[in-house]
Image (cartoon, rainbow, N blue to C red):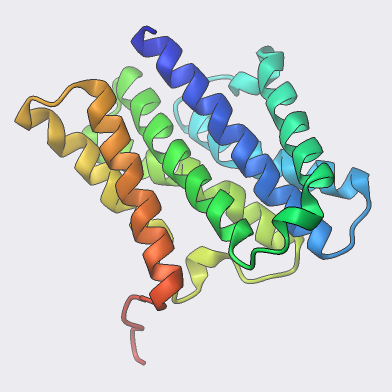
Amino acid sequence: MTGPDYIYYTDLMGTMLFAISGAMAANRRKIDIFGATFTGFVTAIGGGSLRDVFLNLRPIWVDDGNYLIAILIGVFLSAVLNDKLDRFSRTLTLFDAMGIAFFTIVGLQKSITYESSTIAAVILGMFSAVMGGVIRDTLMNETPLIFRKEIYATACLSGAILYVTLPYFGLSEGINAFLSALLIFTVRILAVKYKFSLPIVGG
């Protein structure tokens, strides 16, 4: 699999995971199937669309129907398996953690491909990951995770920084992406499990 293919399929996987996360959030609020589909859609495409706007690009899902298919698959899985998935109290967090891991790395890779500076690419990678969740939480009338004490965007930044650092040690692109995504996922899951948080200014 070539580099562009790897990025493409990773992006599709992240899109599906975020669609599952968004649809499950709607399912928990007993929202109908249209509402769940809409929530899954905006959760899945929100961050990537914002990234593409900053990169002066047309959002990829507009031209590539595979992204819409990935979203529909995610919504379908959330509907069919909702009862089973909802038995696990951390299921939504699990899918969200996988989603931000995938989207951070893909957003970072795409930003670098379009010649963003390293710092801008790191920030855009984070934006790709967190903005879908911000839209999801706003629609659900909840405080977005990035505004809570929980470590969320910081996990994305840690993986993004690792990604731009590892090439100096001669690691291949695939290993670099895997380790960086794994760091994001691990930091996020540990933060939820052990309630790690950043200091509050003035607190």
